[in-house]
Amino acid sequence: NAGVTQTPKFRILKIGQSMTLQCTQDMNHNYMYWYRQDPGMGLKLIYYSVGAGITDKGEVPNGYNVSRSTTEDFPLRLELAAPSQTSVYFCAGGTGYEQYFGPGTRLTVT
Amino acid sequence: QKEVEQDPGPLSVPEGAIVSLNCTYSNSAFQYFMWYRQYSRKGPELLMYTYSSGNKEDGRFTAQVDKSSKYISLFIRDSQPSDSATYLCAMTFSGSARQLTFGSGTQLTVLP
Image 1: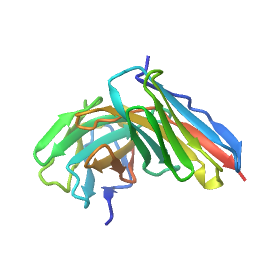
Image 2: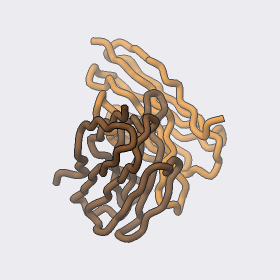
Image 3: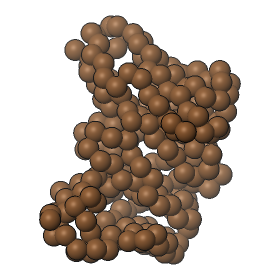
């Protein structure tokens, strides 16, 4: 099993552009999460999903959208990118109180 | 005040030392407590999780939770250079959708 995979690994966006960060898991996890990690700030929850078709906002959802049409995929959409969205984005999946993280996407908005 | 406080370090210890990493929290409703290890430019990796108060041991790692003091600890015995990483504590409520609240992480370097 590959676990949680994320693409792309790196991306540079111009202000106002849009993009989708992809996340796929092959462990049949019901729960999936998107976090962002800024230097020295820990991880902050953007959105989460408890199953296909069900999503909800986390602590910092503004400027982002998600969908969960299948158990495996949980893409994160950035509309109108802003410099404040420069960060490392992690997707995670889990079935209980254990969450397993992907390798991350480093995003720079200039 | 942050919900979860963690000393950012950096912390440097010689190989073989016992390392103590700590977090304090303010919300007494937290019941599940986790420790993650994050190597540079990698995703966090779950080390251990505990429920409510008490100790849990896994090899060289011991997690302790003191709910009365709102204080959790991770001890690493016989530390190795491969333990050099950032350690993140995290916690959540019982019955939630498992949304974790993270500390900011402690950067540990184990010197050979």
